[in-house]
Length: 532
Image (cartoon, rainbow, N blue to C red):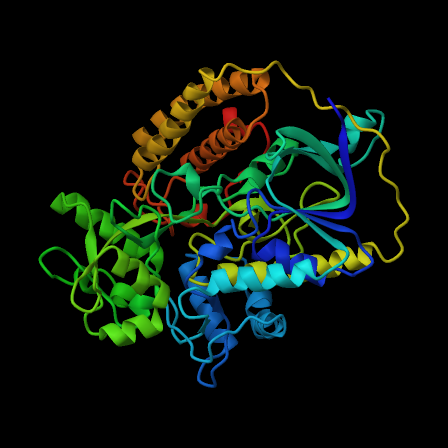
């Protein structure tokens, strides 16, 4: 098998907002490689309808935004991190505009926010940002963007030179080139993981199909700690329609007066929280879940009939067109919605620059845990985090390379190719994929219990052993790589949930419904903890 080796100063794994904004901010003298798992537009960023939270109006303030973030985070936010991110927001918005992103001068209001501060491009903010930054990145002669490349595992200095002592350093990565079905070796002085979240670990999710937490799993296998993975945020309003299983109905609709109703037309959120339908996401999702269990009905509804068809289409053109194609007129009909897995508030432990436990390895964006979101992310703080972390990471990398003269190893271990697997065996792989996602939805969903979590843990241990057997004997392909990551991430979520014997933010356990001061801390897992 021909050995394919790529050398860079900086290897960025992921092509969403974190990865793209980082490559635009790195010095031109650095050779930068960006790996896209599929195509250039395939990332959660492109699916983001809402926008980016940043204080801009005279009646708002940093103090207000910080307070809203801390309240949503339910006592687990790191205040210093929150303050640094929030106060940088206007600068990062200005930077987006300088790159050509046509942000609307009007501001949206979303759940948990006390003021209008959501910067947006209609209801296709993420799509426009992604397109704009791709065009900018393609202009850079020092940036190489490769599509159809999926991360497998990292290469450590101690794998190449076992006699090396001291801190473990990441020097490269094994990557599957999906187009040619071959393993390629990427060596770099610094590797930045920007692979996004793991929403596909659940049966119902607003995430794109590739959100399998590849970066988090690879970092954990390499030796990084993870934290707070029990806090999966469920977005309250995914469109409920058989022809559109992953379409998000933006929170901005509720900011424009949308009211959640049950089938009887009752505004059930008014009695659940002072903010009603604009309550923080964890509360809205949990209330909807309870309403559905009581009624036995498949969905609730979002009433936007106070807006004319023309006004709705003007404010939310993408959503309007999508609903129109499904024969739903939001000016006269309620929109059927259900909660779905949306965002991972935990991740690989990192500081705001993305530094992790391992030298040479950085993690930014949703894959990282910095303490910004605590137990529940405030709406539209996620894209802001991507921009701030990319900015901080770029500064650290630029400084570290200013006088750097280090060299990369000339040779690394050759990837071991097992025999080609029987195609019939891949049917089992697909079955395990479905089993994990169904198990997570039923046992580790919006509302959890000790018994459900224990059952999920035992089954996932067995599934992960089965996956390991298949992976070791299987010719490398994207399905088995994703399944391996999905299985590990599911196990880590359950392990984290079992350790938190209380209810807080987006983690609610019926057997421990109270919030306890003794658990006002991070849930940290070290490599090896998942099977203990």
